[in-house]
Amino acid sequence: MLTAPGSGGPTARNREHFTGVSDSDNLEAVKRMATLTSMASARRAPLPRRVAVLSIHTSPLDQPGTGDAGGMNVYIVETAKRLAQSGVEVEVFTRSTSSALPSVVEMAPGVTIRHVTAGPFEGLLKQDLPGQLCAVTAGVMRAEAARPEGWFDLIHSHYWLSGQVGWLAKERWNVPLIHSMHTMAKVKNRDLAVGDRPEPEMRVIGEEQVVAAADRLIANTSDEADELVRLYGASPQSVDVVHPGVDLDLFTPGSRQAARRFHGVRDDAVVLLFVGRIQPLKAPDVLIRAAAEMVARDPSLRDRLVVAICGGPSGSGLEQPTSLIDLARTLGILDLVRFEPPTDRAALVEWYRAADVAVVPSHSESFGLVAVEAQACGTPVVAAAVGGLRTAVADTVSGLLVNGHDPHDFASAIARVIDQPGLRQDLSQGARMHAASFGWAATTAGLLSSYSAALGNARQLGQLAVASS
Ligand code: UDP
Image (cartoon, rainbow, N blue to C red; front, side, top):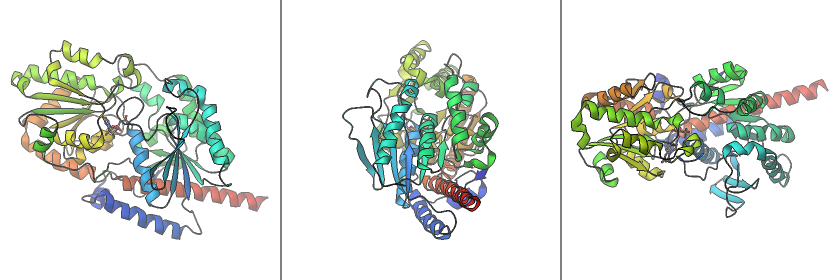
């Protein structure tokens, strides 16, 4: 198992290296690394010239925070832009969800999005997509066949549905397949919210097939790497740990007062923030229950508490779109909750700055971009001690981690931060420092390192084959 160089992380060394370094500074580092790596690897492992990125079930052009669009979409946008800036052309394949979409869109210099027509444009759910994988794969193969031979040097697939397409493409194009799971059925099913629907066995099998087919796997954290090995039988040598990142130029601390004015929140309000797709897995209900508990403990909060929830229904949450409203009404705090539609990045920054605490109570989380975005804005996080959140949040340094999902425990942890201004100030400072170790430039450098290793292995295998023939 490798921890890829450049993967940002909470180690003292990494923090020292990245603290106070903006993403644009880090970009220079990526470019330098790309140049050095390509020079050094002229004889050994080269960097790819072109990468086919597979994002079949959701497009990087979609608004994150609702439906199937979330952290993975942000991840692909941010790393694709930076890969292109370091000289690697990126073509992202995604299924077309509207007849109005052009077949090719230039998302950024060096990054194109190709919309593959497969099945009905609208109304197809993620769980229906396995039935369209053949059509998607045919579209991807056809697009590649229109190019000169050997167009793509490498495939990077995201989520198991894309991995299935990558599996066949890799064999036809004779290039390495790098795969990122983002979430895993076995982990989700193990940590399911009460009453939530488990992931189907078909997905479990599909993920096992992709793990077996991939040349390298990207894990968000070392916990995820262990899960890939233990639960899916991945070879430890094929797993690279590369932490996701945050846009350190966009998510920055700023005036809380101005941010509150921007969103029409009183200066003296106590603001608790949830950002993410609304579904049982993300447990926004735990925040609503915790807020009700806080008001019960301290009725004076009733006049000042604001619970802001940014995002739209997703996954099994689509089946009960009013459940959070109903819960808040039942608990008598509906007037304290602001349900905000999926929010763009600029307005989101102002929410993070406006908040006293960002709350991430998820039942399972492979990383938790929201936690790092909040911290980059200097806002402490109270999060569930699960999965990647144990890496994304440094307990007692940048926020507080809560064991389990008992709303009483969340209420106590949130109240600790709010009632002790000194603690909040320390956590806020710790949050900024912790987030500074997670720039997207470091993520991109980690991906390039993994790509390079995959190409190096492929070249060695090719040489062995020639030598033995
Ligand atoms: N997000 C957004 N607007 C919203 C809600 C969420 O842009 O209204 C973004 C958020 O900023 C983050 C991503 O969606 O970048 C969610 O990523 P996270 O890793 O927290 O959760 P995931 O969606 O991957 O489960």
